[in-house]
Length: 192
Image 1 (tube, rainbow, N blue to C red):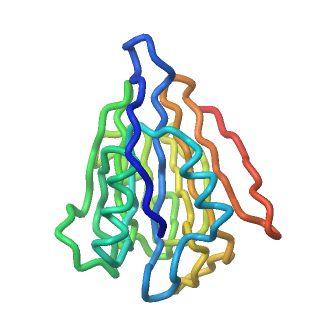
Image 2: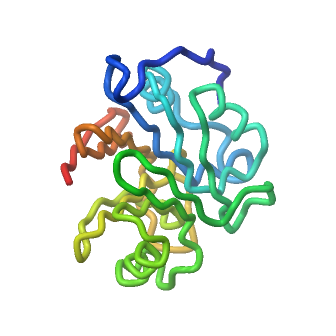
């Protein structure tokens, strides 16, 4: 990953721009990838983020330090992490958001089990990783979001090999998924 400078941002409710949250995970740097692909990394650093939510499997402390250069980080421990991170995290963004890696869900990405975790955590939005495949759905009125793998590396499941990350804009109640497909960055938007 490349070094970047921390920026000063406007925050929600203080007359500045809407809060923007980077949602990222499953980098597996340096074990499975050397870095986030350059085109995707350029998309990340051109944005201004107030907060970073990381679904884990960073694998190295250096990746966490790079994310801390982007904004305040809330990260959870993935099944491949040996970092001192919590297993779950919650944050209030005008609605309660839960963060978990998702390794406790089998089969990977099972919506019923993710829904059960959201209910247990008392959140209306649950962000998870582990599948290495980006996904947005509303399951029984709970928003389930997975940013996929920022490096597109293989997983033990049905990963698609497409590098991706997410953006959450709480004020607009919108998730965006940015994917690197055939060398071009493609953005999909999801309202909830």
